[in-house]
Length: 352
Image (cartoon, helix red, strand yellow):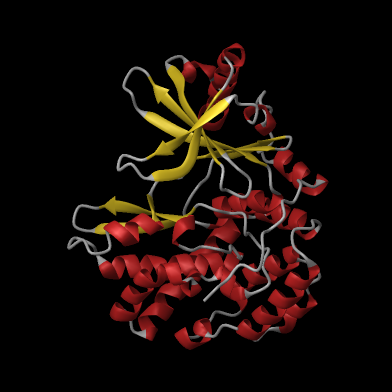
């Protein structure tokens, strides 16, 4: 079972990361900061349609400030969704602003509604954490998913990632007779591989969503990460492998039920091949990101030392042992998709 060692600190955006964000259009001026949203005057608990406490609270602002805050939040939506085209906000209004008081960084969630058709969308306002930003950008470049986000000084603006929360999917959908168990198990194997290769940690069922994608003759699934705070931080490789979190066991059992080791290995090799293609396609963009990460401080030295030893053992490659920081560990891990594929379920399953 994978366990997070302790609460992770927030890493400030370094000069190197800031230069990268500016060079690739991720640094924008929005007019409002995270701290501005913390000056709410009152809040009430937010319950779902079943009457269950969501652990979010809806916040309210003094009347003298509410209109200006709402106008600024609509402008942020235009930057996030329409490259700053303010014409898109003509029929929009801010329906609700929520805060997750139990989250490590207490993020805000903004609900935007189109008054013409009542369709709504969400986005998040968070404290900018370098770990999360590296995670978001690696997801954007190396996964099948594209993510819209930007940074304004010490504030991170991030789009909502749609899908059924993993915990809810396991609870309510896993026994559905229409569930395609083998396709879901296959996607979990590929998701597990993506997390390991790019070193995204803490992917238990509360931290990912599952997209259900109907096709003309079949249903497909895609697992998407939600939480990127544990990007390249922890010192144990099991943290970067969703298969080791007990919350994911119901999905893992589907894989054990339907897949022989040779089939699982085939899917892992397929995913590593896709990642290799994305690495080549990202080119200088990915190189710039990794170079910023190498020059940055994003993990304690003891975590770097522990992880590089475990990965050297996993891949049977001493190049990991030469790494001096977590950015270099990520760089070598990405090289492994070209240099040394994993061999079998037994290799993947050995965890300290």
